[in-house]
Image 1: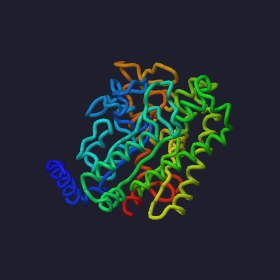
Image 2: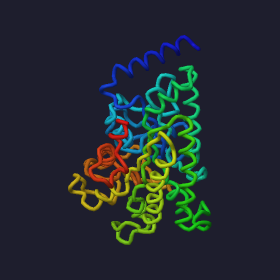
Image 3: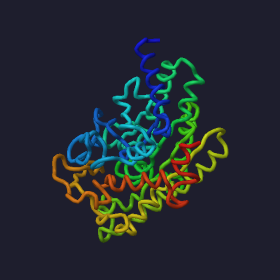
Length: 360
């Protein structure tokens, strides 16, 4: 083993012990789409990129590739877990970073490999899982012991938030994809969940034991959907929401099945749909004023509506639910993260919240 790498591993493990009281888990691994991408798409040939202003306008590190004016939901969860600093994107993670966690998320990606292909390159959930397998082997090479590696990975939190693009950038885009002609909404949701379950078991086989599965948000209420299909620009598009709720209901059921079937693993479901609907139904109680349009001016490109580069966004960003045409503001991301971490009701997280999961 390389001497320099031995020193790095020793320092990381020692630091983890020293910071154990403040840090709830040793590491945090993140899988997902634009809601979690923090720079993995920056070097890809893709229209789904956010490494330019006004993205990151409220972030101390500027436009990193996050589809937000500031922090994403997973950024806030990392803070709540006591992890210092941001989790590095896989594209730039080094040997020491992997012991702290890696963000594999890729904007426009989905459970289905073809999802988002009209926007160019992206890393599907399957590709993200493959990247994590590479990380696990890299960790094994550093630690030199399979059991030690699996024990370390088993203490980490795994966050997976996918599925939205399988609808917005696949099923409900018949000009590019045949899926809506091939499958009913029920069949499509079941197909997605079958593939999803298989990939979750792969993660389990490579050490994952604490997995947080984020449901799909109400995509029929996004500014993109409202501009395309709402009769008044405010009424949510039921056709989109009802289809994704089939997936969410199935995902919650899948969590039960996996917890009963897979030994020594804990899966939880975060009801992003319900949390977002709470805000939309009663925005003033959350300090939100605008829910039907995004804060930045957007331009549409093959279905991806992102902020126009270098344009000045709205000034009262903390009062907006959406940042661009489909991604929430830091304000909304913070609400989702806090309720996922400390559930305010039994519907927020099932069967337990992230705080309790971290204690197991």
